[in-house]
Length: 115
Length: 113
Image (cartoon, rainbow over all chains, first blue to last red; front, side):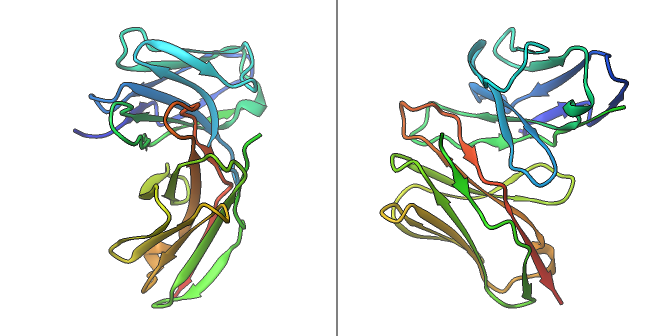
């Protein structure tokens, strides 16, 4: 298994444009998480899925953000009408909740710059 | 609101020394604790997980957990310049909880030759 993958690795966009990121989790992992990280901060939770069900969204997540995991495998995170404050590293992590303990493994991240 | 506190540093140690990184957390019910290493511009990489009070050793790394004091630490023995990175502490609920770990801001470690 090659781990969690994310695409694209970098994205530069103009304010007001829509962007979509993809995450492919570790194949046997049923949970998938999205985080946002800015410089000097730890990862900030955005949302997570168990299989195809989106179980929780952060209250910090505005309605411009939407995420899907249609078949319980890969996931997409879309940001509509991007703002400069959306510039950050977007991290995806996956985990297996069926074991005794749960550990998250991160993908390489997508770095977004909104001009 | 659950909080995880870490000294942002930087913590500077000479090569070969022991680096000690500390983390405190607010939720007494937390049961899963993780240390991640993050190089500049890269994503977090899991180093250690610990679930029971006491010490857990893995190579040059030792995680220490004291649930009574709500304190978890990471010791790095024989520190190398390649250990220079930000170390993130993460704390999670027990099974049946929110499944959403809370991360600290991270401690920057600099190992100088």
